[in-house]
Length: 330
Ligand SMILES: [Zn+2]
Image 1 (cartoon, rainbow, N blue to C red):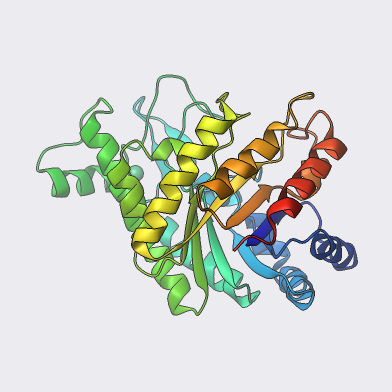
Image 2: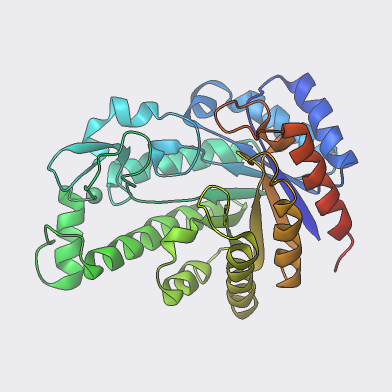
């Protein structure tokens, strides 16, 4: 059984040392370090030190392009899209959005540089975190709009479908976006592989509209580990059904594709009085065959006030106990 936690918000190695030791004491086996654009520009060597500290404690290490280009999930801003407005997605209202387009070759070039810097920190894995096109409901979104209608998307769509990119977000457009994400990720995953690290991918549950898309993502070449993050509190879903359904889906495709499968457990923004649902989530995931669980994030995110649970200490205790109960499963 592998048990992981994300870790962010601290770049002081002597504090990281204590926290990594603490994770090991709590039976965690791996850590996902966020590696935002801020880290890329200002903390690259510090991150290498923090990764080494983690490894020396016996933890497997993963590095996450947190919020990079805003194409990946996370509470980190992107300097790149501000200084390179030409890489941004163009929305259906004709205006740019605060997110890079995965079909933009300049952005892909920047991402390859990110890969090189991240791999120089010597992690075991690159962790591809919730890659997505523009989502109107997120920060900075404009209701009723969709993307992308940039020049690269228009050309690529016409090549693939033989007619111009429609003004409406049709089923064909949704499929095109899925295919574009696969194409973008495959380039990044191949590059990570070439640089000598393993690749793990976590997709947003909402991006799995069709089962075959789920399979195509899991089947990408050079991908070692595949999973999703069914955050039931955030999406107002019933825990047992929601986490169970996605865990079974992940387990099934990963068995078929010979990949390790993982599931993220929501440890942030947990409403007071509902903390025990975490136990149900962990139970559902392991009963579905999942043997790699991670929590977002360290200390139940008590240090990030915008997403801290109502009762962080209680939440963290329940997470650690629930993981402790399954840690010896094989
Ligand atoms: Zn585009």
